[in-house]
Length: 117
Image (cartoon, rainbow, N blue to C red):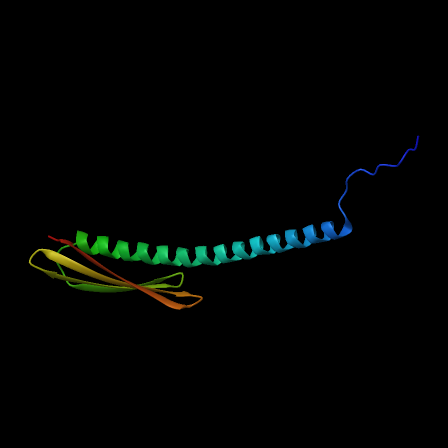
């Protein structure tokens, strides 16, 4: 009877090397997507600040007596310009907000209409 040494199954050096390369590429892609998500959240934060400032001006204008006003404000890189025109018990508030993004300035315009007293 002849005995042969039976080697347990194992990975070759090339297979391990390919697995390490694939894992490295996947981890780099994951790290890059995290950076992109962080930049997007920063841009979204500025947009939310701009909309909140614009809404505050609109609420103040619609809650006050029918008058024609204008205002400007700057907060953490967000510039808001607001103007109110009133006629016949109705006020219209025009709000323009601007903030910087990595692609250049981002401008949004809002128009609010409501009754005034």
